[in-house]
Structure formats: structure tokens, C-alpha cells
Image (cartoon, rainbow, N blue to C red; front, side, top):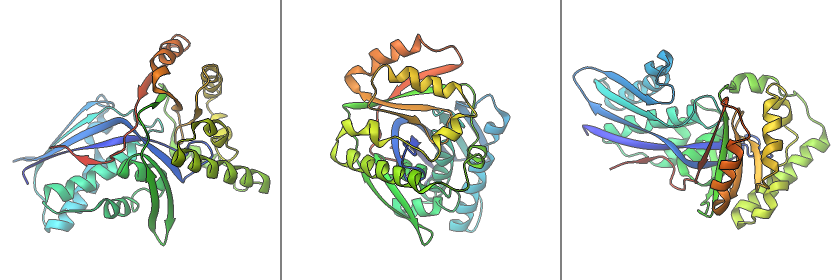
Length: 297
């Protein structure tokens, strides 16, 4: 092939109680294209386009090159164009998007088919936590577990009568740093608390029992510790609670706060919430993506 274009959705992982195991895909997403060229070039539009590091896109190019060379036993020149809509380092799966798009595009431009299951397990080599890469691959609500270095997962489509509201601070949070502040040990009570809530979360999404989400998303494993380093997030959750969301959690490791509302209420809530925050925060709405990574024809 001489040209391919793909789309990868943003994700919100953990969902409170489902630490490192639950996640969902958003209609918010990035697109990127690869075209054969005389010389290799990279162009980035949107989020991160003013950052020299993002413009270089070193992680994408490194992964793409390794798989393309593995498939073709050579390297060719390409023109890469990235249209980034997903905020970077905000807990919305931007790293997973890079990893999946690099592997998938290397196969597609080589004219070699790859199943989503194969793609997902190749991505696991680069991203050891399945809760982001699984929904980005399959779409919908996903439950993931790693067994013998492979991902075992199931997924369920999310109906369009519920939507996401994202409050995105201008300040990023490092996933690596946010993991370091977590306790090395937890009490039996806290572990049992999260097991019961995460089990309820799975049932709620599988059976569309949205009234269960408020309790199901409660967490004692990670959110409290992570938000201590970013106290503004605690206030954000309190403000959102006034509008009676179906659930509100830290998205991934942060710094975005993810909430779910019925779609018929989402724009009204967004307008009201926008008036509550300073310019240091963005408030956007998103539907849910039930397709996952896909080629655009």
C-alpha cells in the first residue's frame, strides 16, 4: 500500500474501583496517516503541536520502524501526519494511542493483515497495563487481565444515551510518578472493598444498570493517594457531584476527571460547570466509541 489512515480512540481507565483492569473508549480520538515518500517527514497538528518533543514523535517512529523492518526486512521513507485531539499526559490514553497506531500502521502500510487480538498482545510488550490498550483496541467498556504475558479480555458496547464529561486541567500528571506514591501494601478491608465495587461495576456496564455506578466506582486503592498531590482535583469532584452524575472518577492516573451523565443532560451540565472553573481547566463532552482502532477508508 502507498497510503493508509487510521483512527484510535481516547480511553478512560481504572474507573475508580477497577484499578489496572477496567477501562472504556471515548469518541474523542486521534487520527494519523502514513504515505510512502522520497524522504521521511513528520507533521503534528493539534495537541502537542507546539512541543518539539511531540513533533519528533520518537516513540511512534521507533515502534513503527521496528515492526516495519521486522515485516519487510528493510526500511523505507514515509510522510507521517498526526491529528491529535487527545490531551497528552492527562490520563486519557495518549501513550496507548501512539503504541497501537505505530504497530497497526506498520502492518497496514506493508499490506499485512493483523487481528485485533494479535495487535493487542504486541502492544502489551510496550504498555504493561491492559486497561488502556484494550478499550483503545476494541472500543466500548472492557475488562482485562494479563495471563502468561497475554491479555484476556471481554468488552461491551456502551449505548449513546449516556455520555462522558471531562474536566481537563492544564497541569499534567506523570503516570510513572503517580504510581510511585501508591502504598506498597493494602489492608484486607480495602482490598475487599475494591473487589466488591469493581465486580459491581462490571455488572452495571454489562447490564446497563447505571444507577449502580455511583457506588461501583468507589475506590480505596489509588484515587485518594494520587489526588493528594493535586488537591484541585478533590474540589473538582465535589463541584461535579452537585450535578448528580452517574459516576465521577479520576481518569487513568490523572489529571483529567471523568464523569458520566445521561446524554440528554450533558450540554446543560457542561455549560453550568464551565462557569465554575478557571481558565486552568477545559471542560469537554464526548460520546463513547464502540469500534476501537480502525482504518479510515
